[in-house]
Image (cartoon, rainbow, N blue to C red; front, side, top):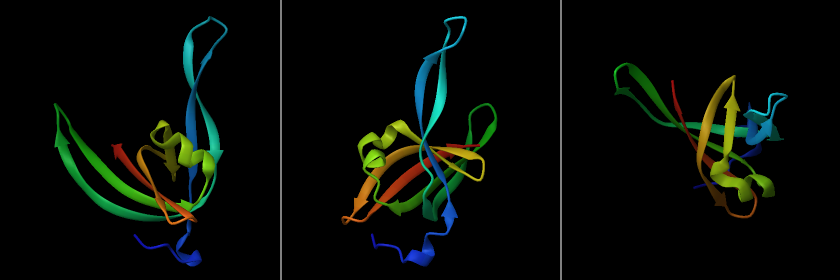
Length: 108
């Protein structure tokens, strides 16, 4: 795992966490709370089709961002939004002392 050059951090993403709140009917609902809006380097790992009654496309990606202590602490309790598509954060891996690599997945 190499640290990216500054010019490779060219994709603006949004990292969010989900918080349980109650609405006016006292029903529990999940709301998104923005953790940060960093620039990232995106790499596609793999993709494939999964047949479970219908065909779904599985997307696995890696995003590398600059170090953020809140992202590092919350790890897989986060979601990542890129171009309107929400990905689940599977793992957060530190790269040295300056960057984090986020492994994400999405079922389309």
